Image 1 (cartoon, rainbow, N blue to C red):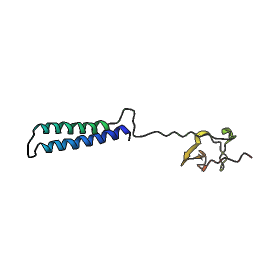
Image 2 (image 1 turned 90 degrees about the vertical axis):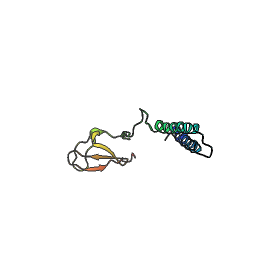
Image 3 (image 1 turned 90 degrees about the horizontal axis):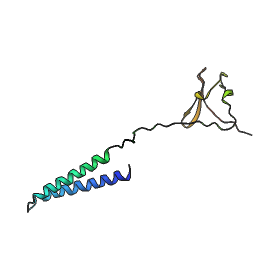
Image 4 (image 1 turned 30 degrees about the horizontal axis):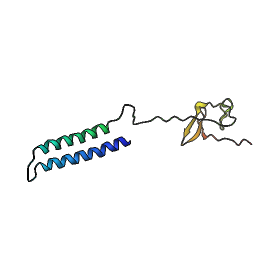
Length: 121
């Protein structure tokens, strides 16, 4: 929640509270009918602030798309990447991210295993 929305909600609470006090004061020991109008105006301003603060901006979206890009380090040649089980040729489309780790799924035998990088020494 942004700082502007927080300020708007706090201001709305103050306006509504003051409006309620003005409306209640109109019915006190010395009735003052002009306080009813002032109280209603303050309450309407408070609810107006709540309405404006709760609206979403056109750029805001509830869902965000997360895109994983796999950057294979070292000397990995995708032309020679083969399945450990059946020896079938694998391509970059067979590599997906699962729980933050690159996982290879063989389209031929269906074997799934985590892609590990061999030491370079």
